[in-house]
Each structure stands twice: as structure tokens, then as C-alpha cells.
Length: 278
Image (cartoon, rainbow, N blue to C red; front, side):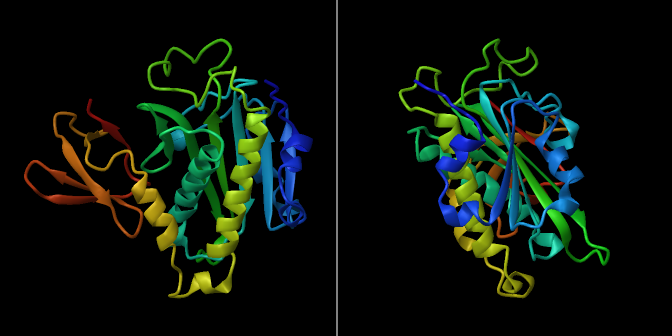
């Protein structure tokens, strides 16, 4: 099995229409693909800019957590876009990215992936992917200068294993001896394609600023692959003795839960994290 993972190989799996409308930059090692796009955002004129790395030394997830980004094992990829959407709809960029990543992986691997609200992919109760979305508002505060969606995908187990602090919760998509050549390049290219097509369809037109903004299709795919729906959880940072049942995900992308007192609560993705009770 060959695992050629570089810019030329990724681009070889993209069609010309997409390649001509985006910019891709590949790094063997970088501190953070998100940070690279932040630093260079003013120079980016394309519809979408993509930074991909074989290894990150300062990869991070939500709330400043470290994202383990070992060499020769994963796909560490960030996309910069300038969506014409209201600020309240930014969560749907993360939802779109999660759906695009899941669909890209399933093009090549027959695995039962689920999306853990709001931004993780799980396989066999182990986290195999996570997304960090960061944004800068325009001067009026009613739109975005840019949004960066960064995703890490654990394709293989790291050669030296995961760090001790995550070895019981992190997993990988497949074994290194998979019979699919260049699987990381193929998944990366398909992820770029899916993300690009969803972005152009839902987030890149003037219509997305008015009342016709509609991401029902993406949201239904997100709901249908929910890892949490029906599970018992507790809210991290709250009283861990108090448990909740996950009812589902509403039209705003928020998590709906029910306590033992039958009270319905809506959780905002920017406010809390949850953990499944096993």
C-alpha cells in the first residue's frame, strides 16, 4: 500500500473547475494550518484557500485544547472562506464541515461514522476527527471578513501511539496496511470537493443574507448521523451527578436535552461541552 500524501497527489484527485477556483498550500510540518490562513488572509483572493499538513506542532481544538497531530498518520486541513451569511448562522459552517468530512471518508471506507455534536466524528465510541471553526467579523459586526474551518482526521494510528491523556478516547479510521493507495490524499481531496460544493451552494450567494437561507439538506444529514441522540449525557463543568437525555438537534443546530424533571433545555454549541455516560 502506497501512502503518498502531498500537494500534487491531492490536486490530482480534484477536478479542474475546483482547482482553478481555490488555492492549496501543503506543508510537511507546520505549527497550525488555521494560524497559517489567519496570518495570510489578506493575500487570499480565491473563493477558498486550503492549508494541508502531514504534521502539526501546535494543533488545537475547541476551548484551546491541544489536538494531537502526529506525522504520517492523519490529515490536518483548514479551509478559509468569506461566507455571505448572518453572524448567527456561523454554526452551520461547522455543521457543513462535519457532514463533508463524514461523506468524504465514507467514499473510501465502509465505516460507521457518527457526528458528536457539535464538531467531532466518532467511530466505535472513539474520536477520529474534530473541527475548530474560527472567524473574524467585519467592521460593522454584521458579517464576516473570513471564516476558517480546521479539521483533523486520524486516518492511521500514530506510529508511536496517542498521548497518554487521549489514548482511551482517540481512535483511527483504518490500519496502515489498507489496500487503498494514497488514502489520505484521496480523503483530503474528496473533503475539499464536498466542502467546496456545499459552500458554493449554501454560503456563497447574496441569497444567504436574506430569509431564503436554507440548509435543511445539510442539517438532515447531520441529524441522521448524530452520535448523541438518544444517549444519556452530562454537561462538562456542571454537576456531574445530574444527567440528561439527548432528544435531538433543532433547526438552529443546537442540542435539545431533557432532564429527569422532564424539563427541555437547549444547549448552544459555544457555551458548553457534553460527555456521554457509558
